[in-house]
Length: 91
Image (cartoon, rainbow, N blue to C red; front, side, top):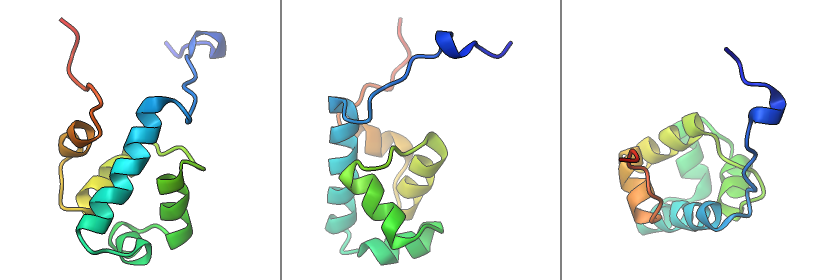
């Protein structure tokens, strides 16, 4: 069953978790001495889109985040851990 729009929780892309994620994505790219253009070429995105993600001006979806992590030679869990985002299943 597809949830009704009223049942879907919208998360503000300016929320602290997103801000930590965006800052982490940029930091990881810089640590690997990659430009936005170089990373974009690795993952099939334009430099502009990489810039929008890193600045928080565009919210990244899960598929793009997985591609981003792979472009940095990381697993998604590595990126989430580095951004201090809890991704564990609740008990």
